[in-house]
Length: 152
Length: 161
Image (cartoon, rainbow over all chains, first blue to last red; front, top):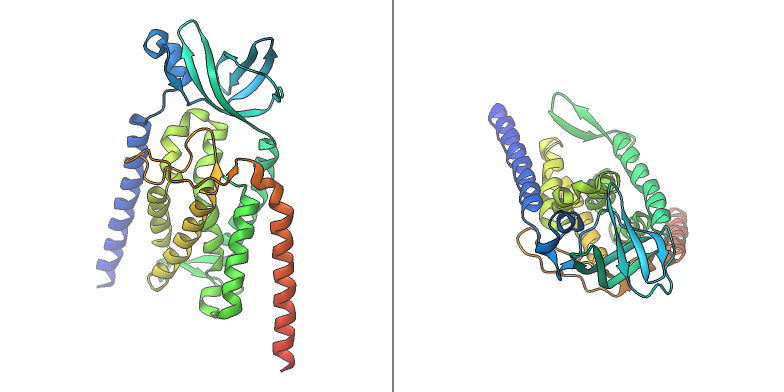
């Protein structure tokens, strides 16, 4: 009985892990966004289409008619827009129309002021909760599972 | 997404308010799972695609209720059998709270894709622009401190009785 329960539990774990992996594969291969990288690889296919998928986009440099959008580990591109309120080096949430000549326009964007600070301050509760979790539970080999420690 | 300080503080405000009504010693030992649940969708996705942006599409399902709840169930199975259901309940309620809070936020690109990858509908109710929530951190933390002071006074009064 105990052994059967143990097998059922492992089966459930395998099924859940497979389902999670399946979701990842589905998402990686079938999503609605057109990415800048895909457009730069095939410019004519993306001409005039909305691009909304960038790799951690940052305002690289302000230009007379817009700005240079830089991606983390990806190519950069010129964005034609009004530069009022833009700050170099800030992250930006953006979607814009791609042109095969190699620029974006009609950009709808939001400068993510303070995103770096947000990442840094978010690390503290994440770390704290993970440490708390490690102290709150211990593995019980006999019961084959995590159980609360006495001081939790 | 709101920052994790806001997520954790709101989770704390909710959980402690429940403590005011009913304090269960058994569940208090699992309370860390509520906090873990409330940060789970972000810690499963953000570090990966901040460091490796090309992983965004592959990790995004963990920032949806379906994917996150699957992981909650998987984590709960690591607990001894009599704790599994309660562990899942705490993790899942923290996760649901995470998505409810995320829904408050408006973004240029769709962000609250609760049924992704089966549907691309954005379920957010967007009251605030991304980043604006950070301005409320002092208020949220202030509320946490006030609640804790209130709880301390209550405990003292209970002991005196």
